[in-house]
Image (cartoon, rainbow, N blue to C red):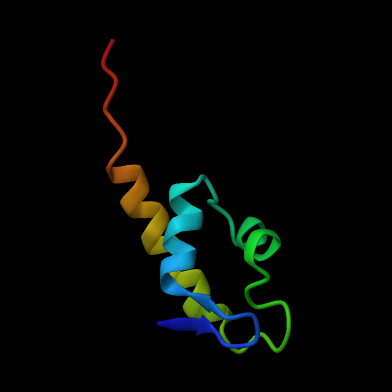
Length: 65
């Protein structure tokens, strides 16, 4: 699904960015251009990124001492 129509950024693009280590909205904007035009998609883009980052962090192995 397209999240940012201005820059053709999809939810898949955002999930892939999170998997590649993007964890902040500023990083997402720098990498994809998401929400740097009209800003209408910012709320949905932030929510999608937050959920994707949460999923990435849940998949990290637990290290015990």
